[in-house]
Length: 284
Image (cartoon, rainbow, N blue to C red; front, top):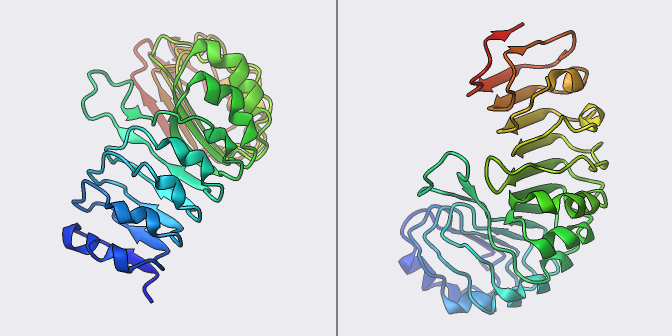
């Protein structure tokens, strides 16, 4: 009996096989030409892995929640903008990867799009990867219910989300990757109250920072730090130079001063990116 199906190109004729593949556990349609999923998909109760990455699929079936054994859903770079209402019923879901490129954007800010949040998605308490969703009020307030999350990516974050966002993130003790992008380049990220940072290995912050977060120097396991549009008036180097595991540091319009001074530290730094620092005239 067939348990896995990988479709590499034209998917039309391959989809005709699905009704006879009820025992299928993995379906990989990445980069195929499929634009619509067949209705019989929701009868494949053994399905654990579904990859729709880089397809032309625009929506999932309304009864998608019937795939009760699904553990991984990847819709990355597809046309899917919103998940079905019953997604919260997929209690075994562990990996939810949904980000899309914004090919029609007219600025270099919102180049990644999130998926719209569906009600009760925070009831997926065993979810480990959530990448990436629009920051909406109910999600921000209830994000802390998903304590098993290790990877979180949110876009369209607003200043007023700050306190609830920090409260929720502080309840999640196993975060290894955290990416937060504000709704536009002038919207500050209010993240001063974040304290559960010890586990973070990769951190990407896109949005104005009115000051260097006081917890930066507690990121002892951090290997990657990306700051974009931070517009900091103070030198962030002093707060991160002693981080023992930092390998990759990326500044993209992150500092408004004329001089970036690297003092002692950065023992393991291998990659340094400095992009669009308009006021910077000297690096020492």
